[in-house]
Image 1: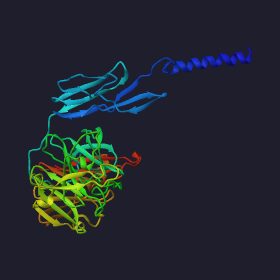
Image 2: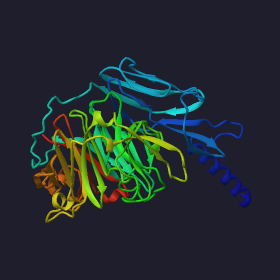
Image 3: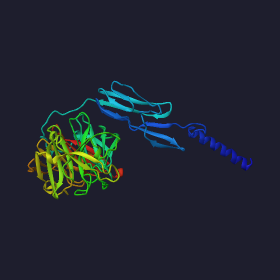
Image 4: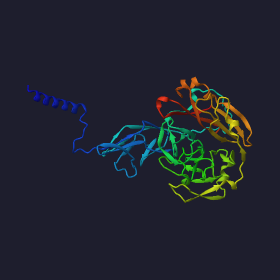
Length: 451
């Protein structure tokens, strides 16, 4: 056979084989490639009455490649129909899933215009709420598997967390310019998108109104242009810009500046390093800087929301510069408590560097956790409203047994950094981040619930 003819036939055979092996997926020149939509996860947990956005990934085909994009279920250009196998348990409307009664439902994506794939199993639970309203748990108790209230989730940079009355957890994180808040499934995975708060603080002073029907949270935010990790109080302490204590309504996927919060509270230009609310006992505790010292203020929530107001100007150059914000002036309200706080006296021990990682108020006590990931254990101190130290530098038992942490897969090497503490209806919750070097910049996060 002529060599040229042989090579030509061989090339034709190889081309045909390649076409068959690829499943004939390459579109013909005249064929229109459809956009794609899939579920972001396989499972989702809701509580009765809760509504969340359908977690989907949408990609449009542009110039020969698929590009991620946001999908508007309101206008629904792709005529996507999300079908629930059990709408009495979980219904879907305009891209929103609503939990209606306890049970399980499977969601499917259907469309003639868009490629759709996958199913989402939705589990709806009844609301969970502990009944006790006093705190008497032993903070030295050792860690057991049944104390893991929120299993490991691969999240980046958790700074704090909180829980609502239905038992759903929320997490705060921070990046170079913003604080972020997101809801979590009971398996530790994220529900929907982050709410972004530009210059909203470090994220550790984050607290939810436990008893509210909707999700309201308190934090601090600056009116200026700080971009240094959001700053520990929404900007540097003693900086040039006013920081306000802010009350936000949680809105997944929304970006909201401090001046756009539902309510604002002015204590001093430094704002609050932490703002923690205890709706059960109608109190809020604020850790602030005053006269180059640390102070804790405690107020009645009901009183500060009826305080006289003050007008504060936005100094931020990039957004809303020159606009004014009306804030409740806490200097017109008598606090329940006000005392200087010598941090080193309640956060530093022989094996602890003294970094404050959590502060909460419950009833008539202030609880402070401190420590770093390599410390022997998390330390906790408890103060009354006069500033007296009731318990000092107590080792938190759930963090002390490094081998148990590894055994329960909470840490690969025993490192365990505290990230927040809250008491809700007498139940203490502790947030932690465990190192997993193979995960790169991400950390494994969990919440421990004391017995």
